[in-house]
Length: 173
Length: 422
Image (cartoon, rainbow over all chains, first blue to last red; front, side):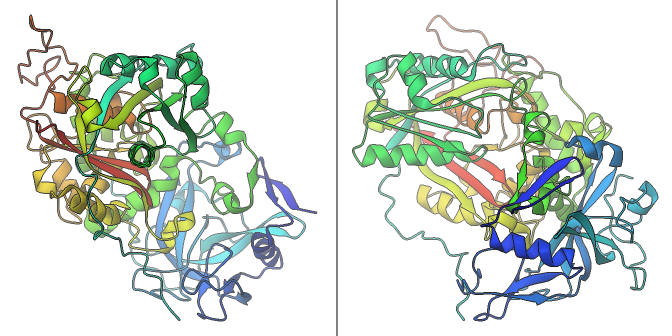
């Protein structure tokens, strides 16, 4: 049986043969963020892929990774494309540098994990929260359920972290 | 452990095809919304116009290439409609950055002896059928596997997908919305001197930054126009092109779909404010034997104002980080040192996934841009070089042009053309 569920008005499907994505989203549904690590290079990668780009190693193990990081860049959508997002604008997509493996294996590389900015309960945030989040904001991972055995990683502001005084925001505000 | 050496490009191989091939003919349909033509009909119209421009008969064309995202027509149908018997054809998947890549493929298959003259077309009802902005049919398709990592988050359209690059450039280098808006201002001026442009009205920086936000940092007027149209270029060996009706635009070098590492999720590999041109330039300029300083005219892809700026910067027309200054300095306007997209490009003339910018540079090299200047008794345009509204858009003494195609921050194509020295 493929992993399948309707989420935000969209039918999301992970085929049986798509082992890498299937395992990734299944771990998310257990409340665990795991990434593939190549035994040969010892490096983690995101999103799920079929080989390690640093060692061509096809073997991998799923390693638990702390879902904490810093906003590297973002998208703030005011004109939605998919119909179900019309009720959610403005909404944010965050591109987050995980603390784990940041700056490895070279200076500008990082595990940059995407997700919407949501509340700790996984709801889309109100506009005033959006206005306070930008490049530099510290965030932690939460999960949104799609179906049994299938959840998506999302991001929420890390209440326990030390936050920058003024995270960088698009200047014309 | 061996780290991959993906940043290395081969610039040592012989440049023996430099100056051997040419664009022999160009053609397009009108730039429309609500065309009421099929993509097959539009393609036939554009290919026929390019054949007439080159003075070629159906029997002179024996190769055909097209590109699309399942929104077009197969090349052999168009060939059949026009009575062209093909020795080679291929329809490839892809959008922006395909034009230059397919020109390179055409050179390769002719060089291999597979055919002798190739018509390359892009036909699309980008407004009335499969909308380029991603609304309608494109937003309704099922989402499978790898796509879940972006589309499930409402991260889907081109503007949404590229926005992290654009914002990060502002963060890294202090680039301002007003600087980037200057790209639209310049291209709108150029379009006002282009009778076939879809949008001919001149705009100001305030018009652009005052228009509504689509997704930050993109205002409505930072985004290209959606139109219905087809475009065509014909590629053949220079000696054959010299027998054609119009002067050939000689191909000096070409780069096809050059990539940053890991384009399935290129944001993993920073700096994310750097785009594929950073790699492509090391093929483009050495193969042509010229530098950015030598280029008279650029065609930097303007799906968005930002894409023009980012590419001009990463191809080395200015220092890294100074793209905002470069595009707002007047350099890229007609009358400036190195105008960009003199037809108005995708922001104003019409959206064709890159091909209209190659058509424009071909006409510029001929000195025969289709502006409002009068036609002399010899049938040639009498250009005034007065670039005020409704006037001329021919650049004086164009010798070298560069096209910089864009698919996404992680993938680009490029081409340098010159006048025939003969």
